[in-house]
Image (cartoon, rainbow, N blue to C red; front, side, top):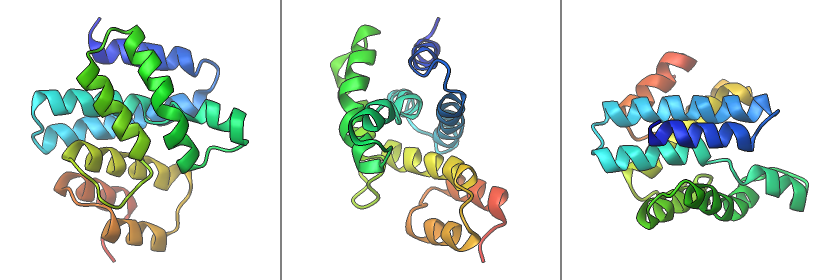
Length: 165
């Protein structure tokens, strides 16, 4: 089994019984993988992006236990230790773990986005959250203007939510 399959399997087990969270990370991964491929990411960056997309919300469980919510800032705090343990258990190299943990620790921070993997992860998460959170057309337009930067992510957003207004 390949790396992405092993991470997917580990995350499905991590969220066993939680279909909503499992479906969310699988959809984010699908968009992230497609955007990364279409934006011509190099192989290593694509790999890190896909691992981060699968694990980006790994902090939700502990956030809900410790804080009683799944607020973005709590996810960003609680996610990296969980991801480090999961990825370490799957024998990932330290450089990969570090970058994935950085992305998890910042995926709800939309200022000072550093790296195309970070940009794509944020866009993929918004593509899914816009539907799951039933965002208004106005909110989607604002996100499009303020957050989206990749040609592919923007095209997906426009196709899904009616284009630029």
